[in-house]
Length: 69
Length: 476
Image (tube, rainbow over all chains, first blue to last red; front, side, top):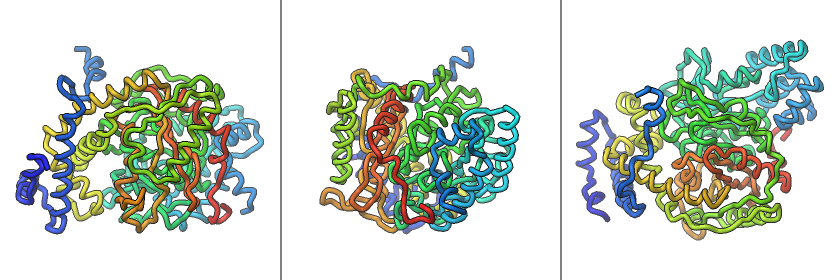
């Protein structure tokens, strides 16, 4: 398991939830922790796509053109 | 009502439009036939949230008066349609399939609602969906599950499940779905109809309750490719009220639809799409590729390695944007959100900004690989869903000797084409041995709906899958 995913714990999730003002039921914590770890693994794998030098896919070109700037 | 009125419910939009224009068919008779069919089949399918029978009949009478006075508007004039319950309809309940918005009545129409009104269509009602469109089963904890017309113990797929069930069962001639990770194509595939996710930016999202701002797409669900082209003609076009709307020329999508398949180059990506798939679905795809070859297309296998990252990239983007969109509900009323949707929203809320931005950068790299493939191929084909519709209570599905989570499997094969925004159709290409429909995706180049529709129409002319009707229902 990648380092980032290993650092995901119930406590880290609870801290993040508290910062957002979310109250997560105890019974939902285990499943959520697993999903957050799995998502963190997916994000690490994205390096395999060769993202160096890439801009985010979503641009605001159309809006900028319309603004007349 | 007679079987003759049920036959009216299974006319195509194009045929009904032709008869209405020729004054051989009364819009009032057509709408009455559909209302009767809805009343008889609604308990079995649970496909409508709000039925607008009186309003639709009044619209049909108005259409009849206009047509009699020489004011025929086009092929949707007097045709009964349905809207997924996330399209705003002025003065009409719009629940988004949720408990939280149970009493929400918009003060204005969505752009597509306006377009249907301008086309003279009769709105039969608002259709069942997965709560907040964030799920692919349409098993809704507040409204109950939408049920598949081919076997009512099975799911329709989602999130536009009511739309899939209603069109497949003859409750309406066309419906609108919305597609963020496959929500048009999954129920179209599982219910045996044609669903079109147009190019991102082609159809206005003004007045559509949002889920994911960089992925949400609006599109038609019909029983034929020609009908999808007719509906797209009514919907497509730039709308300054929607920041994602793109000002590109809009052609007549029906114009070249008879042009045939000969000469098209069609790629069959072998990465990813066939890693987890039912044998019968894979066999149906193989057969469909053969039909396309016989029709004169060059069909060849191709490799697009980026596809292996599709789920990770789209997952990070979709749930994070959804969590932002629905954050106030999640914080203030979590107990009023279904457990499955709440779990996805929590995951999105826990996604760090750095991961979201990285996913959007990864999406650029992913899109570049797909764009390269589309320089070689006019179209790509792939299965819509890896299995036939699971039972409503089924959590695990056996695929290739492995037990897979049914829910995760539903959107596995559709999400790759949401990231790119390219137009993609799902259409029937076979049935499982249990009698459930199998869908094939046809993905075109950006703004290339016409080519994808031409291929779908050509395939329909050579096969009979789209002509089958679900049995078992009253008058089915």
